[in-house]
Length: 147
Image (tube, rainbow, N blue to C red):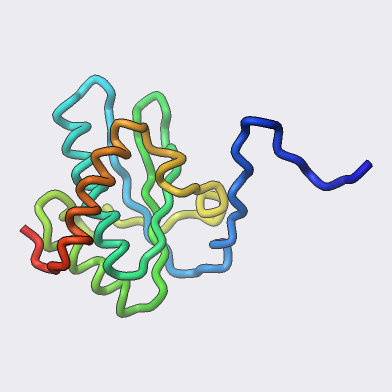
């Protein structure tokens, strides 16, 4: 009998945290409360822009449930270069939906980075649908002009 771990039928195999060796990370917190439709829509819009900005700047974007009861999500970004990080932050601050104070941009702990997953595995399905639409329109629009 093999000691190789197997994935049970119907289960998704775990994603190996191959991003553990990446060393330039930030984390942003987003609230997606189920009891606040307007706030949830604003949060989804914000995340959609962040995903578009990440795609524009060759930035990895992952997520983690920060507090399931409070509908808090941690969005983590890893940068391939200092220039891409600067451009991502410029885009983040240039948009009303994503602009934040510098003290809201945090550095994740290593255990959070290791536990993070691709956003589609973490965000609620209804939010992910909105995020995908916004990011696709932004990225595929070919324009770096953010309204």
